[in-house]
Length: 359
Image (tube, rainbow, N blue to C red; front, side, top):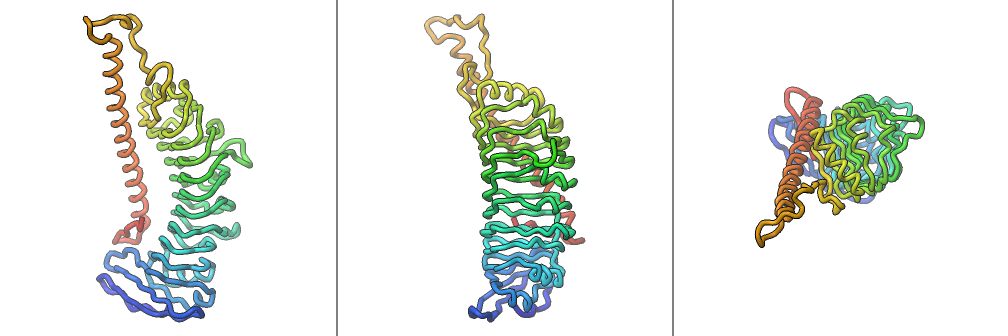
């Protein structure tokens, strides 16, 4: 890529040409050193290992790739980033065919990169704390247990089918685990009878193919937010959920075909425990767990409708209003969780300035 000019205290735009075997590639980057924010490289293409060895990256802590192509995010590539002092990397819309997990990077965000392979060295000591690999084509989480310093792991929207949760038991500080939008069918442990994630507060399993939750194997004492929306669950033991997760405040089980017993128990249990819950309305024998007064089922007022019908209509309206309030509360709590995550990431950024999350 060639040498970069010294960055000033304002936004800098530069264009340069890099010649390779396949011809010249036009690249562009923007940096803002005053705020120590992300330096972004647009349409950068590094296809050959020889290109990487002659690459000189901007001397910034946070570097982003927008579109373009990285043939192999290799050890050589990581070494060049390390020489420039890069600690945080994101790539959005950049084709990355293979990722060799870097051991010197604290935050790595690869989004929509067509990533299929992640290589993790069991002998390496990784300092990675935030890892997001959403919207890729990963099928396995093999060797992820060696990323022991993670605070957040986001593997949403991949092709993963089997997730042994004890993979994450080696991450004592893991707070957020996002596995939504995969093809997950099982969550059973492979080597232990139970899984303990002492620091986990947010678990998102939405948009998968789960038919049951192995609640008796999970020890998640700090769990606050649990989402199992859009799965294949037909039964749900809500009493066990609130007993196993005493700090639970948000529970989303929408888009599941729960049976009537699970549905009614969930409504009553979560309401009694003040858990913000979102569960699809079910057409069961007792509508919405509302039991009409048996003594008034045959009373009528003149020639008008029966009292129970009026009560039913009123409770229908109340139910819809309550559902709207629940959705709004769910959104508020989720925003709070997102804000907490952002604040944690800001604490990781170089002082005195704070960087902005590229996503």
